[in-house]
Length: 511
Image (cartoon, rainbow, N blue to C red; front, side):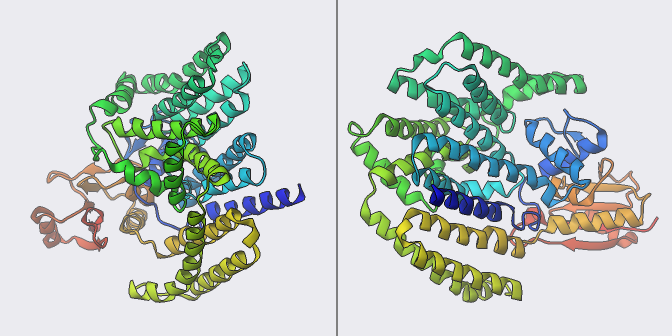
């Protein structure tokens, strides 16, 4: 018991370092600005139900991420990289606790900790736990539902049903109805295997109807604030129509053959081993193993059949596949895979030192802090390798934590650059120095720029009849825009290597 508590404490501390260290150092990446800027503008407008970007309604996305980011900004009295990422990071941290509770019902020590460690170190989990995006919010809701179901599946418990549906709706109000599809698939397969049809009762019906009302309430309140039925139309378009007649995100059907194992890296080879072993011995494996094997396959097929596809859509498969891998490691492990992972561990230790050669080759300077970090990472891995040999998979987890801490918490934040941040900061400076300046934009700058610019009113599209003192241009300068340079405009450019869509130009003049 003392040893188990010690390892729980170690895993808790490691997860804190991995998720929160340097959380706010990396510039906003991808669509993070969509969530951060919309939440910031909600504060400026005093709204809870109509997110805006450049003060135009942006109601295509569910509200929970906006709400939590808004609360974070209000608590800290500031909107920056840390405050917009903090809610998602906290939910990721709490997801681990709920998942640990769930797998403790399935596995005894040490497999409950090993399973939790696999989730923590899976690429999909740690990648999105450090980003201000809705995926980690949805994953939290799914893990909460999974935990309640596992805890109460042998009972007709109103509390169990309520917790299950609350987690489901939390996920749906974070990302969309994919959480409904995923979470109904799991108990359906369980009912078919174990004949648990007794969960179709008045308690589950009342809990479901009650929580379903809360699900549609935000859409109703958004429609009331907009004085329009647009939110309900968008709900239909973004959820149901998008699955069968998508207007974007048209990736090839085989995309999830890549992203399912990718999001489970570095444990992907164990996933392959589990799928092959369980398919080959399907009649001999236990019902619990069949449940998570079939659920993982069903979720994979569900997302593959849907016509709208993006790599991160399949993230809800993570907790089910992690449990599948845990059953494989516990009961069916092929020893050659274990030896293969030992070899990988050795290579990772060497790779840490080789970064002293790789980074300069990539034309990245190694400052003192990065050098110390790499040396520390090397010695931590050596310590784990030498002193945790008997712990087998727990030693794998600790070493992967060190590697991922080096990459996600140290190297990526240190070497990340953003033309969008530089542009927004310069625009904010100009707005402060020329408070009466009329600002215009060309080619619809992304939300990340507006976030850093800290705009307080809408930036209008450029036209010849407008007297624009500051002009924000995305992508490229047209001859018409270049002609302004002959009329006394100053000029600044912010270019992104290899990404022309992130090139920005600011033209400005005195009042």
